[in-house]
Image (cartoon, rainbow, N blue to C red; front, top):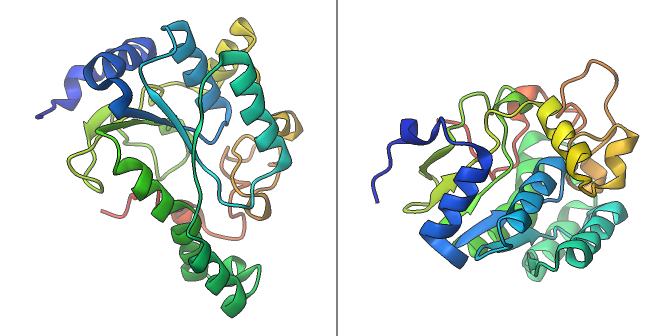
Length: 233
């Protein structure tokens, strides 16, 4: 399938979700870490009829309790099945035995190794079952994401199609939608966690900081991707 990215730039988030569901059905996967952007997309999917689309998540084994709680609220409130992928047990055991529980804070390479085992490999398995994946990425989220298109062929997982319905949304639009539609959110967002990942790698942000400043806060901003959305072209 050949796509012209420019043809999708004027479409709304709801239009892109509807197109994803019509074009790919259950072969489209909504990748969710259950942050505010993902909750907006889940609410939109539910309002569009709840499917066909596959809702999936990656459980790294080091998530906050609050993240599991919002997963259960999604199951109860929307009646959606959450397809969960876990990291390979042998790889996790080997990493912890050889390098300890906090090797990811010792270097960027160590951190990327942990992300590869706990996130990237499970994502590859999830995407291997799909033809398209929908994400909550926004251009405003940081310097590594300023140029993301709304729809494009995913060069990292060909021939997969990557769909970012909220690419041009601002943080204000996200919160306005949540308030208007009474969307449930992760309790950590009310404690100054705008971006939530694994518990040891996420902290609350200070006033005026970038929304992803609390992710891997010991690293430079240009390194703040885990490999799920590569930008090193």
